[in-house]
Length: 105
Image (tube, rainbow, N blue to C red):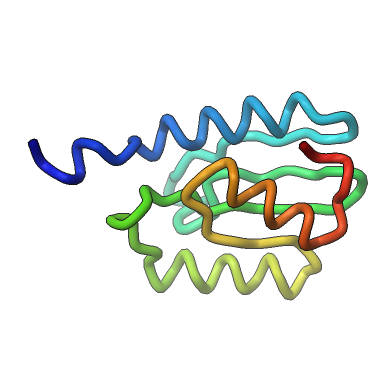
């Protein structure tokens, strides 16, 4: 069996993260879809308790961020958003706790 076949698909990770985010009070998050106008934009965009966040979701161990994606994340950070590359729901939870968004579990 191929190692990559044991790693969850990006879509599965995104779905799990979005379900959790949208269950939190004061949170709204959506999945973005690439287009000629949105190339390189993060997979998930949202707000929690007036704090904007974006997440570029990658498969653990095999997913790689492109140069354009890294540039877009940096633009979001400069604008004040939490902007990170994540590979799991657990990572998102850790980021929120680190950022002082404490009502997450």
